[in-house]
Image 1: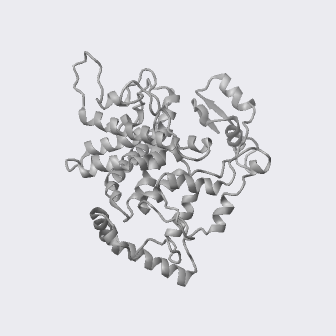
Image 2: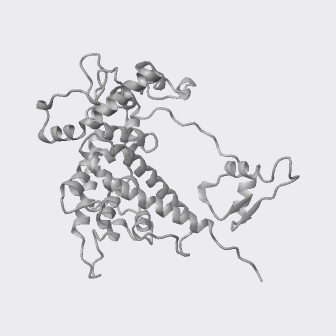
Image 3: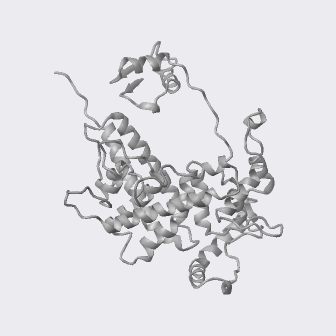
Length: 403
């Protein structure tokens, strides 16, 4: 078992002891060998003798849990809120909504037919009923043990997604009809399981993204410069890490702002995009602040570093992940510390997960935001290729032989 270099918080005494216990092959080797490579003695001593960290469970309650019930009902042909293939009131729609509905009506009808086939022949229905969601949102183990928590969580979550504008609470007993496109809500729910604050802020910024990248006919997802601009916007929302000392900020890397006396020109399009996204994030934070839900739940919807900074471009953000993707860099310079490398690789991996979930959902035929899938697909491919190149570089090093 070999531990290579400083892995920061990624390697704890608990993980190290688990891995060390697997050195050697049981029944074949009488002993195993553990090698610590490129570590100082204090780190080695801590891994070998350090106290095992406290193991804590994950809170099963999250602010958008009730959205799972609403989405399940919208996918159940037996439910009044089933949305696929149903006749709708076209006269009550705007011109844009009517055009979108007609555009995807055939695909929706095909989905409805497949749901009926699954129910009839396989006794399978894609749904979570009311009893199921109440069990999910029941009191947690910590609450049962006397630790204070949010009571009546199902209704708290319903109120959260209603005030977010995701559902309409019906006056009758017909549940929670969706108030947004199905693909957008399935995206925000799936993302919220791991990236709650990022998911709701991302949805709030979709109109701005659509305006800049779809309504604006001068942009195209086939253009690499526009792909990079879109990627910078998503990173501005989901990778809000303050710029460390000695690193160029995202704003300056994109030339949305420049140092005085350097003779560089400000990129007005980049500055406008960053400003618009920052304004959206601040508006969303202010909106959530007015919600009639517990403060602890509001906090879970807030992104870091929103509303700070001395100007409309916000707090200087770390450009590290964007630089890797924009330059298609396969490795790190020798001057970059190991801790910084590990941090960037972890953030790049998280960014790829967010893009994958976003792309898989947004491309479904349920509204205008599907047109953003051209960008999400290209950006995810860039992350995938970058991570593949990094892993190849890390695992394909030639052996060093001392002659």
